Image (cartoon, rainbow, N blue to C red; front, side, top):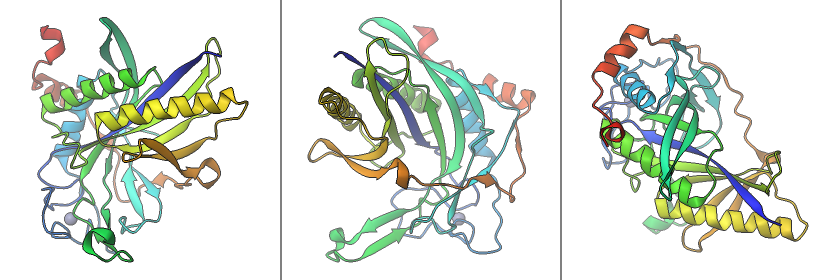
Length: 305
Ligand SMILES: [Zn+2]
């Protein structure tokens, strides 16, 4: 049986604003653990987020450069989950009414242009970081660094238009070059400023219906992305070839072994209980403001060619 591969990428990019998205703490990478924190980003009771205008300017720049329609009104939502690096117990994000919709990027595959559609771009705050004790000779202890909590992110969600690990790499390279060119993100993958989740499924050639989708989380290098996609496509084809079925699940890529491992199944999937964030008014980006941002954008590399 011949299979075709269907991939969608969700890319998180940290915006390089000086201060965080809802407070005035610094976003500088590499500070002493928990030095860049305040009651707002620590999620103390009774505090209120104050939105950083530079975040939306940078996010709108990215949206325009990726041919998205910028929504005049977008809404904030709370994404609830429990994790030690998320002191509030929820992340402020956008769900039903994101900042931007319906964009596209063009990649060149073996000399031929191909359009990859973008479903959406939304804004959200980053979570903190758990540091496991192995690195400090305390294998039984974990530490929490909240410097990253509240660093602004955009999440760029593609449609499942990507058909190979090579195209996935080309798409991520293209996106990275645009964000760097606009200077909206430093895209430092080693520091986690740019990370990708891949949704991967395969289906027999000619079949319309999509196969069961596996999500691989948090890849922070082009090589890992390619390796993870290749491994996953082969794993799924082998399973189907043996008459088995692919489980819908979330997996992690282990760079040391070059394989993906199960993280959680669909049954254990998080129910984020999204609801509108009561602390923030809807964000309005008027046509006038959008055009102002657009008029200041540098000319992108592509049209110049
Ligand atoms: Zn803060």
